[in-house]
Amino acid sequence: MIARKHYLQKIEPYVGQPVVKAITGVRRVGKSCFIRQLLDRLRGQGVPERNLVYVDMESLNFGPIKNYQDLDGHVAARIKKARGKAYVFIDEIQDIQEWEKAVASWSGEGQRYDVTITGSNSTLFAGALATKLTGRYIEFPVYPLSFAEFCEFRGSKTTPSALFNAYLRFGGMPGIHMLEPMTDETVMPYLDAIYNTILLKDVVDRHQIRNTSLLANLGRYAFGNIGNLLSANRISAYLKSQRLAVNVQSVVNYLAALTEAQLFFRVPRYDIKGKRHLEINDKYYAADLGLRHSQIGFRADDMAGVMENLVYLELRRRGYRVSVGQWGNKEIDFVAEKNGEPHYLQVTLHLDAPSTIERETAPLLAINDNHPKTLIVLDQVHGDSINGIKVVSLADFL
Image 1 (cartoon, helix red, strand yellow):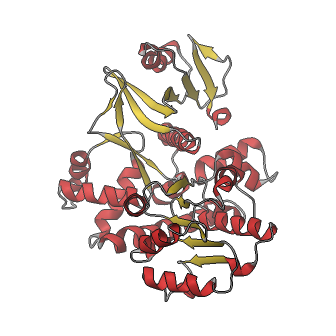
Image 2: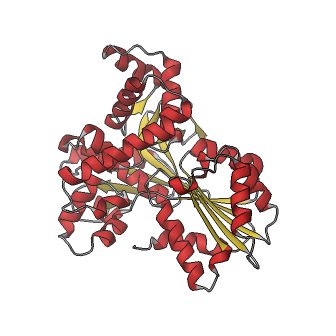
Image 3: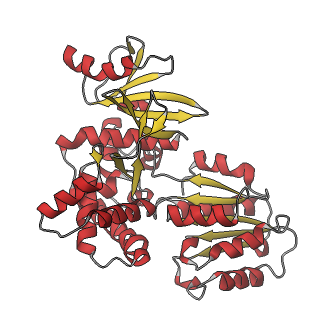
């Protein structure tokens, strides 16, 4: 089991502190493995087993836990003989009815309980935390493997070029590294099963969706349009062209359900001059490219969207808030903001002609401030800047 040091370093300072640690992310992204690593560290520090509680709601062993009362009773029974602080870990807690009541109660006894929870439903999770635990929790988003983590998981099994191509194709879900050989025949059925599990548990069942065919078609359409501006009207028109009866509100609801399950990230547009977010025509990026390719395949002519998706996920891993930039009639692929400081990024396949260089640098050069500007290119880069814009290859950026 390879430690994801980036996340461990973030959460460890808060272990033992009187705040709830909320680990969020799509199912199978590695949240459970992360919890097991935290448990192992506590054991290594001498914390006795009677002070450790782990509830995994995806295991049949915990099937009797249906609501917050069941959960509270289970934890109380487990720590009955514990002395000192009890460390409580609840995995996929959103599957427990009114779970937030139990967590709020434990949080009120901060010297007794140290609580870490995980969840896969972003809206449900955030809403419950904000309502019941205002100021008493910290969220730790977990994303699929970065390219650096992907290389660490694969070890020295292949060449750097082959590693990069595999990452583009198969994405960063940790479980694919259990499969050998790493080919479409072994990996794609596994990723398809993950996608369908998420669709069933976190979308269909939770939202009582009856038209599963429409939902599946909408998901494939969104996967096929990463990097494009989308609106409910446009999606509705496309689905109707495929002889699927749908109204605009249903599209809005289904898109919201897919983003709540963290299969997609909705990225709003940001007016850089007016310093405000725009309310229409967002972009949607996949939580993992492997999940995407398990549904619509991997296509060489699709690389521009794949690149944007990779850059978006990497920016989120690094703690940036990310928007699509708008400067007059020019679009900037990403405005990444951290600590009040923006960073402007443009993503392109090639810089193989003067006209391409002019087209890709013009939006960045139009922004008349001194914040960093970066152009990310698929090709290997010769030269590190153009008119003050940093130029970097995708592999080096990742």
